[in-house]
Amino acid sequence: MTTVTAFDFDRKTIETLAPGDVKQAIARGRYCWIDFDDCAAAIAALPALGIDVADVARIERDQQQCQAWHGRACVHCVLVDAKYADGDLRLDPVHVFIAENLVATVHAGPSPLVERVRGTCRHDFLATAESGGFLLFEFADHLITSYRETMATLTADVDGIQRRLLENADDEILTDVSQLTRALLSYRGAVVAARETIDELATRRSPFVPASTQPFLDRQTLPLDRLAHDAATERTVLSESVNLYMGIVSHRTNRLVNRLTIVSIIFLPLNFLAAVYGMNFETMPELSWRFGYLGFWLFSLLLVGTLLATLRRKRWI
Image (cartoon, rainbow, N blue to C red; front, side, top):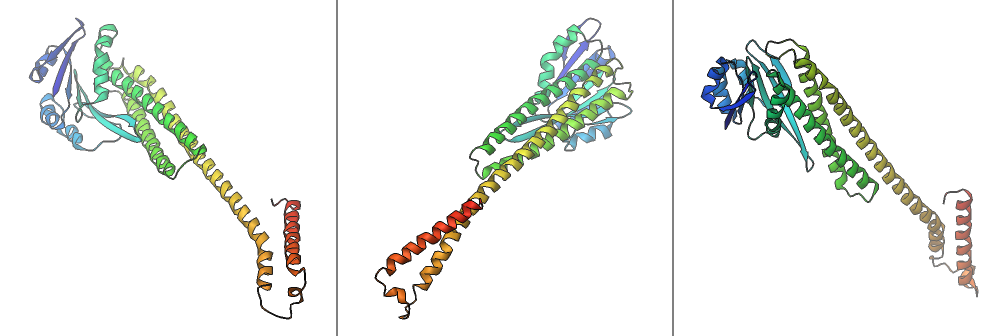
């Protein structure tokens, strides 16, 4: 489905147009936002609106990072929305073409980012907007809001992993940690790329990006810097939690090995005695003693007691 919205900044009116009326509306001085939820339809329609074929061809590429290109007829940027749920980070790219009195957005299927912008742009247009650059600010603002929500979900999962590690964690915990680590790395990469893209729009002069909008875009780089730092911090916390868990497991293993070693030390001389007295030699005098059997057990107990006392004195147990 293709949706066209025309903004009249002089009269502060918003119209919904048919796709075929875009050129006429631009000629009348309207600022048009045309949204494509089908990439094939966008590839077919955008060249007729003055967008270079080379820029349109990028739509077919699998974009998983925010990027920006400055062309002669438009500025083409990719904004990648992030959504984390059930241990899976999903990155949804939205292509944004900024031309003279025109913004075109292209995405495959429904886009939460576009829907959020559509839900607030009317109010902001009527309240403060003076040029089409307000749509760029809307996209940047909602993109950052999406990144914040995703970061909150990732942080909650890191906290959950920490609790599981300090409790009775099973073998699946390491798989979950690996997936969460990859999600944090991908998320940080998306945030850093978004920061560079918005900085490019905010600092590079272009006839298609209003100069009045650039200072507002420049401020949006600060929360992106903080989000990238937060992602790196959460990854460090997760790594340290895993190291702590491995240290706890190693400590428990060492205690178990220590106990097994003590048992082995105790039974080693007893095994020797059992082996000696298991031999059938008539020349062993204690076999004919009246209290020979009792003496064997008394000597065994004395030997065990001596070993335990020695181990305690050396603080091995």
